[in-house]
Image (cartoon, rainbow, N blue to C red; front, side, top):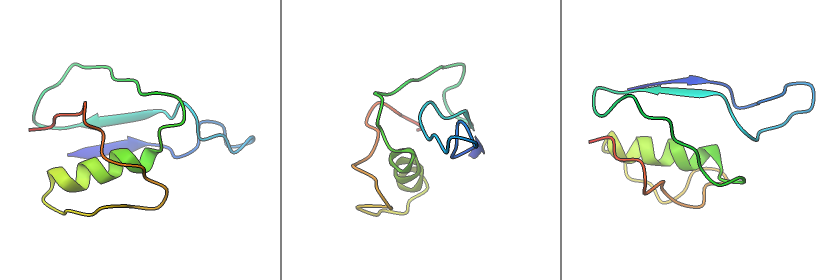
Length: 72
């Protein structure tokens, strides 16, 4: 699995909303996913760690795993 993108959407404004991310994975592909405004990027990172077999309850400002992302 490969995550490519930025943790800032606008470097001048230090905006972290609407992040430009691409996730490549050998599982399901060809999907475009969006999440509610205010969902921390660390929720995605927490989900990816769980997929890789690393179980953690929290990373940084995460509020939980992204249940709608099935990478199996």
